[in-house]
Image 1 (cartoon, protein in one colour):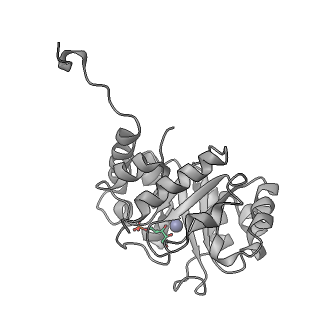
Image 2: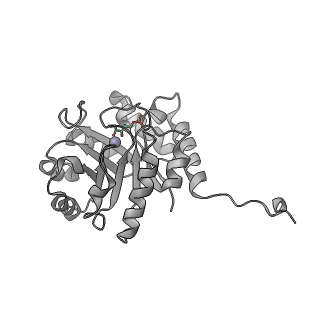
Image 3: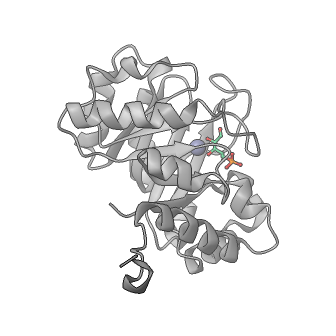
Length: 233
Ligand code: DX5
Ligand code: ZN
């Protein structure tokens, strides 16, 4: 399975989102990851549907919208209308997760379910067959630039195994503290959508950073065969 790179614009300059998105698209970004925060579920506030609609007008690649909000059911229609191709919701805020996942799908949007670092993989047990992707948070959500939580690597492996047991080939996405030094490990564990904010936008050249992250991720996913001359005879 090929690995998709989803730069998170949370770490970009919000006054120049068009420039930031164009740069990462030149670098090979497959998706644009959009972090929506409400100041209740997470201790930060970002953007809502109007900004997503503006981004949609200029982005060439699909928008992967991560809802870190309470009562996401109230806003699903608005984000779908604004142009989200993927919408993910946190299990921690949803007593009726099955209903929400199917409501997202009914809008023609791919439905993702997100687990916070402290949320057990077992929370997915009854929904694993229904999801279009699972997002494993590898930091506590709310801010860019935090350190990767090492426990997330076996967690990706466990989510991948759970989806496989459910007969669902849906991808596992990982979000938080990913950079060129750890991306290969999480890809090897089974992640195939990679979110990266500060590792892309807090660099002098986001286009190059995207390209390098993608190379590091793809190298892990598709091992290069050893040349025949290296094989001992
Ligand atoms: C964190 C957000 C992430 C964030 C990742 O709550 O969900 O998408 O932008 O930023 P980095 O890659 O800097 O950890
Ligand atoms: Zn995110």
